[in-house]
Structures are given as structure tokens and as C-alpha cells.
Length: 529
Image 1 (tube, rainbow, N blue to C red):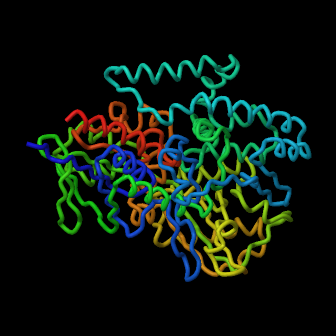
Image 2: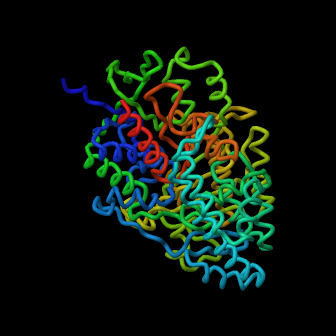
Image 3: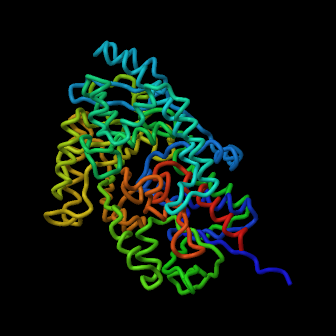
């Protein structure tokens, strides 16, 4: 008698869910992907913010796909074109004396010569060092972390490969890697550079998306993760022509071609568990779908505290999940503009505004912005990470008009005074006022604005606490500790239930890595049945 087909259900059609769907489909399991919204992409979506204006509403840039994933999914055959703008980051200063970080370190070093010969020389060594460290750390991204109780053979092999990479580093760089991991990113930038603008731009990578300031311990880990992704310590603006949408559509097409089915508008209300085994899901409309294995790309707290009944989990485990730090500190302000704004000191707009735009001119500025959040408020002078997506994709706005995507830090999920429904416009006013220090006439060009607070991110996109990374990127919540020690191998205490979202290793912002890694563990489980 033939065995019953093994059905796999994936909750969420973000980049990790779609990557997992591809590999499971390729292995012959024809997964069903259930997306709560009518659009795929999770927080990596482009939506209309005003009639005729479309903008990346939450995340305006994702890290490059893991090379094996991009190759195996054959995304180029699905129309995805990978691009690398010359400009990575434009670092703004109110007086118009800006700095530029280019893809090529040589032009960056040349520009730094105008302000600091020391920093010009240091930047080349800095770039080379992080490139070497990135190559040594890159295998971490595609491995399953070791178990807490005992090491399996694959764990020994993975750790041996990392040890080999570590031994291959020059002694000085090996020492740096060990020392930098727990270091505050402000200390690191101060060791290398004397120019405040450059220090602040480097520090921004360490604090991006997390509840920490540049003087917080362990924030250098953000730079090390970025280096493992593409060999540099700062983030690129975009690596896909057509932006986030193009990536999501290509991922969905590849998953579908491999045999996955994607259902939009199908929110899951409950994961069914019988005898400590996941047996299916129940949709909000009451429909029940049986499954042999379930992958959840939602955040850990959403999965365990809302989708799984508390009686199906050990109280000690529930206590640890409740203590998992997943409180967002990011808001988004998206602007519809009648024209491209003029920034003080910018002459070549086509070049300079094509990458990311950084506002946060020095370490003290960034730390003060974080100080406000520590005490339950948002700063009137926030750190801003900006892109102008319509520069590369003119279809996002009417002729001559543009859209601007602004990542705002810091905006605590819970305010000490008032609430977000009453203070959202106050936040947006502060962002626009800060922008006006660099682009004085920008207020004249604003047609409309969209404000998304952490509460909005939770309500609209299903991310607990409004945390864009599904949990803090901190030393005690990364690698074998993400989300918890003993629950970092994508498996959960419930047989057949797996996590595959950004709340698992290697974290958020690395397109598809967690989904690809989790699918490997699920395939092993299915083959063992």
C-alpha cells in the first residue's frame, strides 16, 4: 500500500518563506505557502502611498542573496537583474561638506584625502580587513548552528570549516575578529578614523534596526554580519534592478516553478498540535489544512505565543520565548514628492542620490537619538537612512516626481507619554524638519506622506513589537542563541514544526538565508519518516 503523500505548509510568503518553498519543491514535496496579505514579500513590499506614487513601505534594501541560493534558484531566468551602483552611501553634513562611500574603496580613499590623510590611508586597510574577515565568516550564513546538548557529525564538520577559515587569517586579523565581536561600534570606528562623518556612517551599520546606540556593547557584530554578506562593513542601497518587488517576484516564480503553491489572502489563525506533533493549520476563515511538516516564517513570539496553544508548550520554554527581545525601535516615513529635492552641496544628483543617504553626522548625534528611545520617547533629531527608489525605477512616481523612503531611528514601540495614534504626526514633522536642514526646500515638494510607527508595523505586517528583524541582533540572540539556546537549529519543541524566518540564524536582512537553511533541516526530517 503506497504511503500517504507528505504535505508541507509554509506560513508567510516573505523572502525566507519563498526560499524555503523553492528548496522543498525541488526536493519533491510541493509545499503550500500561505500568505496572510494579498501581496507577497512580508515587509519587503512596494505599495501605493498616494495615487500614482509607489514606495518600499517598510524595508528599502535587502542584503544580497547567498550565492548558492541565487544560482540554484536561477533568478536571472526569472527576470531578476543584479546591479551594483557605484555609490553605496552619501553621508550628509548640514554645512554641505558631505562624504561619499563608493563600491570601489579607491575613490572613497581619494575623497577622504580632502579631509584627512590619516583616514584616507586607514580606509583602504579597513576595507581590506573587513573583506578578509567577511570571507572567513561567510560559511556561518549557510550553516545550521550546533545543538545545545551534543554535537552531531555535521556540527563538527561545520565548526571545523570555520576553524580552518579562522586559522587562515593573518594573526593580526584573527586577533581583531576575537576582540571586535563584543566591542561597541563607536570604539571600533574611533580606532580607525578621526573624521566624525565617516565614524558615524560606520557606526550606523552596527546600530541599524536594533535597540542600541553606538556606545552599546556588541554593536560591532552588525559590521561583521554585513562583511560576511558582501565583504564590506557598510550596506549597499540595492542590488536588484526594479528594487524589492523584482526580487520578490523572481523568488515567487522560482518557487512556483519548483512545484510550490502560493495562496494569498490566507491568514493562519492556529497551528494544530496532537501528541506533541504539528498536524496542520487552521485559517481565519475556519478552513483546516493538514500537514506533515510546518515551517513558520513569522517571528518566534508570533509563532509560539499566538499560533500555538500554550498548553502544547512547556511553561519554561514559554517563559524564555516571552523574554526574547523583540521590541522594535524603527519607524518609516515615506514621502511622495513633486520633484527631486535639492540637497545643500550636491551637484551630481544622478550619482550622489542613487545609493543610501545617511543623516546622523557624528557619534554624539546618534547616541543622543538612542538616549531618547531609552526613556520612552523619540528624538527630534533622528538618525535617518534614506533612499530615493524612483531614481532607478521611474515607474514608481509620475513624470518628474519622486518617492523617498526614510528609515527612522529611534522610535520605541511603547511611548512613555501619549501613544502613537496621537503622536505619529509629531514624529513625521521631526523627520521633515531634520531633512530640511539638508534640503531646505523639501517641504515645498511634499505631495503626501505615509507614517508607519512600530505599532503600525506590528498591525499591518504581523511583526511582533514592530521589530523589522524579528528580534534583536545581539550577541546573546545570534547564531546558536537565535532565538534560544536549544532552539536554534530551526526545529522547535513540537515535532514537525520548524521556524524559517528572520528570528532564526543568521537573522534579518540577509535575503533567503534562514529559509534556505531551514528547508535543509525539514527535508532531513521528512526523509526520516
